[in-house]
Image (tube, rainbow, N blue to C red; front, top):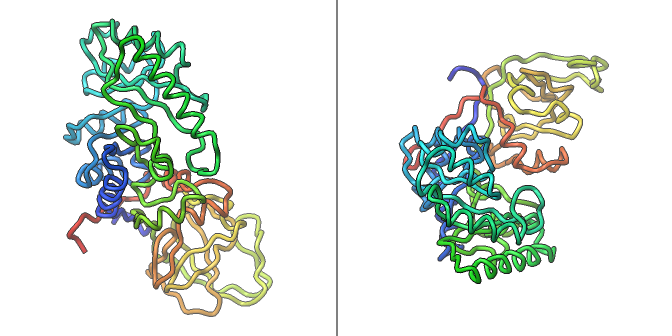
Length: 374
């Protein structure tokens, strides 16, 4: 390894999770969402594992992300979920990436490239109000897609805003609006080959949302889409695929009354042993984690992060315990029967687990374990 801090990625866990989801949502297909470098797990690693688990397609957010997968030799369907600048159309076409379109301008951008019969997925806004065509616009755009020699309508889809809150009635509202749009399209003689609506939360909690395929993101990494779905994720047997580990780089004794780290914002109430761990906020460990009760595992024991997390290092209060340079530190993952999860961090920080894993820096080497390896 290049340094004493790294991310372990269990590709077997991703493969397992996709296989479980594929069985759970059948007959719907699973398309694995591997944007944002596979939610911090490594896009190519996640994509290969997902396909091995039975995914039939992949989803990304950027043309560059899709091109990376093509360069890795992946030939499956790849959908770019977000509208892209016209300047990216040629690269997307060259890589054979299906594109999201929500306006006639999107069709015109493809026509300008001189492409023929390129697959596009028409996105409908059913209430999230981020990207998508309204009901009236959807019919107009679909007609333009069908009429243009540059494009063919591969799918129609929408995105759910509160699927991770099973008690909310708004998911049913969105799905009803979506069905209305599909009915309008049928009245115009337009029948999309594929229809999709469900993200991970929709796939797990809303059978009506599954349609022809589900776009599974956070769940394929073994992370719950939200607190209300934690029990369902556990019941499915999904396994976390990522752990964040390091080794103690320095050990020192600190006397009672002394402060530590920038600002000396923590003062010790007793003599203590402090371990320095060589990673910090430049690696994705939030600077304020120490104020939110952040912990690590050393020797299978939960220990508090002490003092402000710095750019490249953080400190841990080990009390009276013996700790040595080189001892393993687990920031996310399991050690000695104890586990710290991305959700634990998210709950402490007032955010979501997605942000935690996506925030892990490229400075951290990804060590991948594939099925059959120890």
